[in-house]
Image (cartoon, rainbow, N blue to C red; front, top):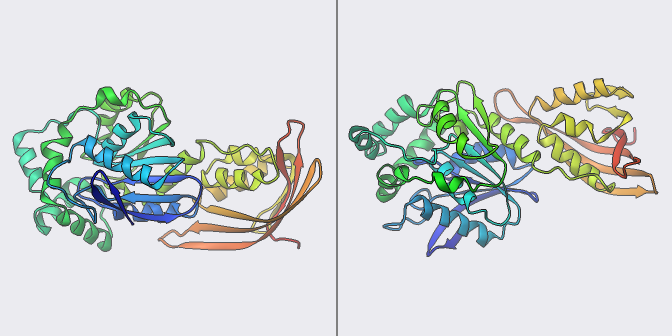
Length: 385
């Protein structure tokens, strides 16, 4: 889709659905499709919107306007044009620096910030020789390949991913290519980021040679109160392509922890269950069951009045990276007991890509506790059997 903002056309790719939206900003040399493997993994639980910065992908390429503030204005304008009321901002590398500035403005609706191999808020000073090399890094297929092999990647990309990076890097407008090394990476937004007032997750690559773990620990984390750091083992700078499943898992867990709804009505229980499950939060999931709950697992195993075993079973399922979608058909309730009939779909990622999907119709018995909250007393994903 195309969005008119700040006098130019910004292109964005939308997928998924849900009340929570994730907005993705790409790196210098990338495009919205840099995120497609990550958004594919998240689209079952969230609405995702990946934006092409000006001068990259399918967005307009005006002759000027490539400072961090300009890029943040574009992203903010797109978010406002879409009327997003509740969203999390996810920025990679250059897009991470843009996301920091945008978050520091405390825009309405921003719930959290995920910084993936982000450029720190402080200026990145390079020797003239290194800066000159950056200016020509995306000139030819050979130059892009050299950067991929020796700088950007901690592990080899699949052939189709490699070709995508080559195409995106070469396609960038000359003024966009030059603006980052000459201007934007030299900008200092350290004072502004102290104003960030939402939860922040920083995800770094162990083998990142661009925005190294030690650099982020020294120049980013101390400037953002409460920021959490996760390090991806064996991964370089291009984690959205090198480790999309693991990146999606961390994002899902972070977003899910931002505010799982309290189950103060029977209708809220399936919603809370989905949020906790898709965030990989075993504690929040277990809290939705009564102490004497009975649960029939999709494998057919039955766990009865045993919270320790129930936790083990649920934790094992969560470790697979599975996601769930529950759709309620009908709820019949009294003052303290409710019967729920609903359809469910469970998607489990495959070891070598792809996914395995299971689905069915479940019956659940909910009980309201002394605290007024509803919890699962009996859950049978096999339906009425």
